[in-house]
Amino acid sequence: MALPRVRFESDGIEVDVPVGTSILEAARAAGAQVGSACGGVCACSTCHVYVKQGLDALSAPNDREEDIMDKAFDVRANSRLGCQSKILRDVTVVCEISGESRKAFLDEHPEIRKAGERTSVG
Ligand code: FES
Image 1 (cartoon, protein in one colour):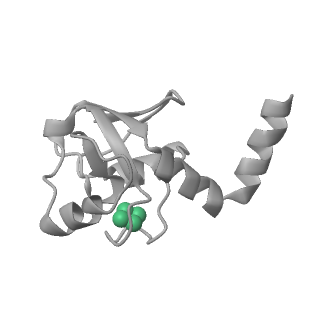
Image 2: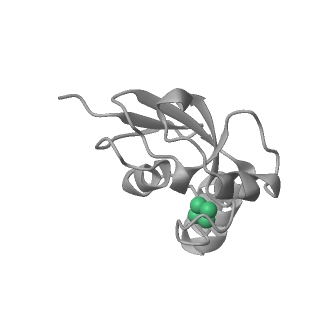
């Protein structure tokens, strides 16, 4: 049986995951730079992603997620919290990592930020 696939833009990272996996769990499996300051318990907005494809195949947002999103930065119609978005069907989900999420990830992983700076300085 085919598995759902999650692609993280603009990094071009892809991962196949079982049905029921959250976008945050997929990001961790793929090594994508999605933050998770609260550890995935719907208490921050650092796992904020924009779902560009496959939005209707995700679990619906609950009231708590909507409350959190009210306080997030640059919220769009396709904004979701990665930790609360479970992939319910065998589809390809395409996500763009929000600025606040990538910043949070790099704050959580200073060693990766340093490596990136070294690479970009060339
Ligand atoms: S990691 Fe905090 S709400 Fe998702």
